[in-house]
Length: 165
Image (cartoon, rainbow, N blue to C red; front, side):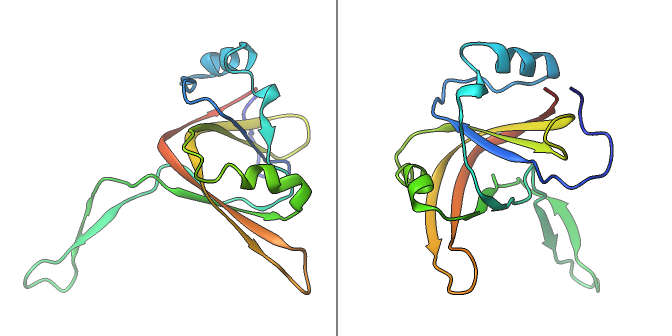
């Protein structure tokens, strides 16, 4: 496959994770292919988080600092050090399905997460990887809509990608 090359809705985007902090994240399409195909980085055996309702934006955030200047009507801006983003995923909560993920919150382990952006069930994609951990799992009961939960992940380091399968 190739990277997505046209405008579309990422309705087939998925989130998978594996519990192993020893993985070296891929840095190129060829290392991504090796990562997917090798026994040490095979994401076919990864756990997929299902029933995701909303994906957050992800990547490297800007950290712009406003610096006031005496006598000027507008402050200057400089670039600071960006903080690793916190990822919040909203899911349609099904306790029998999501209970296992709920048990991973603050377990002290580092996971490798794969966000695979896809516009169609098969075809072009853009896979991104990041290491992180499950920080919280909050359930929101609803009387008029589906019960929902928010999964918060803390990330460690930069995202790697996009890579094509």
